[in-house]
Length: 150
Image (cartoon, rainbow, N blue to C red; front, side):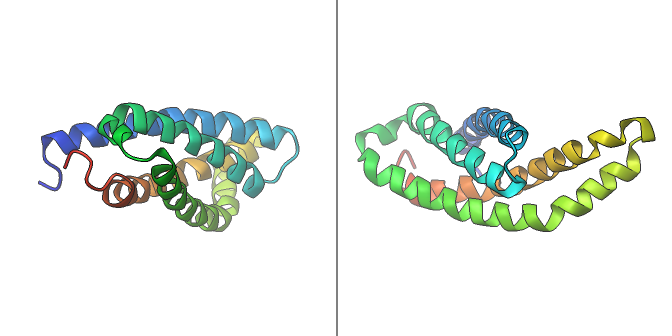
């Protein structure tokens, strides 16, 4: 088995924190879209705020033992892992957004075609969030929180 029981529990906690960050991410992504920002800019802003949410919850709940270590050092590492994740996310989002919007448009009845853009953008965001989840977990586990409750 890849993860022992304590690590599976930690991964579940990390994923639950990620769900809260995803909620923040989607809420702000759509808010920024409504304010007229592009998908890429909206994604960068919403992702950055969600990262702060996730760092706080992971430090307090997922890795509570980490509070004995420097917050500045951990936040710096967490930010670097997250920025790499953001770069991966942005490239993939840019590559898949228009094709996914096209698929959404072709699957929706004509009466709902005006929603294909929003549905396609949100579906694209969902796809990249799942991909980046694994990078973020393992990057943080083996670097940011290395030596914490191993």
